[in-house]
Image (cartoon, rainbow, N blue to C red; front, side, top):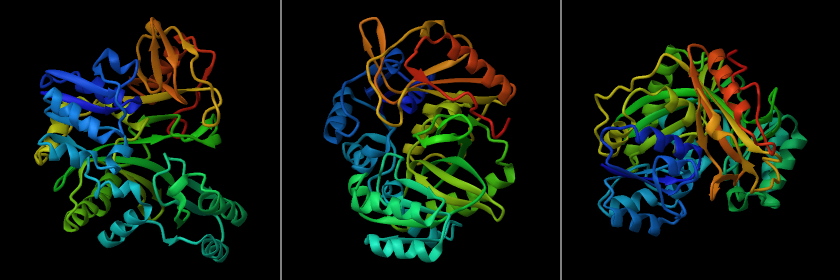
Length: 418
């Protein structure tokens, strides 16, 4: 089977790394890829958001399956265009990708499906939004309605902080058009968990859970990031909770999407809060989480390509992923300054000295024999172990072998469980 993976981050490196292990694979490409992905796939310098170019590439290469990693090309309709060219695709069409592209749409689907979620209201006028916050009080959550690269959410501890977020989103437009409208939600309390389900439009298959760390620094301090590390499994998430999430949230929402004429094919990523009243939906994403994807795939024993192909062809029923009993931890190495301003181009040395861990490249480029940082989150270093403590020790040893003074990481990934 010829496969094209679209994207160029740590998530896509993990997908390529695992797909490359499949006996079903004959040849693997990734566009645009990165310096690490080039070790397991043939990289093509083509932007993930170039829908026309990606389809033309898939046709020219005779691709059997396209796997779309990031959300942006999905919301632009890449999966529809690929299927229109007669090629199977793992990823939702544009209408179904609105589950991530619009917070309002997700809330409407959840309400129609009877899925438990936070109380919410949508606003297109800043003054009305501020009045609502003043009436509700704090803590309260303010979200840009559209795609904001994971940064358009403020959990406001005070009314003033919420008002400031509304001004930033709706008036200063710090996230562009994504903040033209906002969704304001009740602030849920509990443990946050990421749950994944493979979907083929009809069947939803539980595909693991993980917990990530969004704050930049140890002790959950500092600004929010795209994720500084993750671990799986999450001890806080029980089998009973898993069954409840699939029965009350994932499957009803999948059924609602099908009833609307927009069946969901791909991976449905549910961000949940484990509250005293049970799991409640915070948001949906329509792709694998990053860095959660890396931690999950370190534990997967099943053939990933077989599962993705089954989802793309509506044949998930009867499949059951196999997982290693081991725990996995993934720690992100980021460029100093991230998630604020940072400098690209610093050299990373010592990667060849890493033992007992897997290094996923998220933001790198090759310059001759040198590997250079090219992004905020640059590497993901992951390992498995009989316990989370064992896995974290292995990751720590691997990171110590990497010579990159311009990088930083958290040393406490997994603290909730440990």
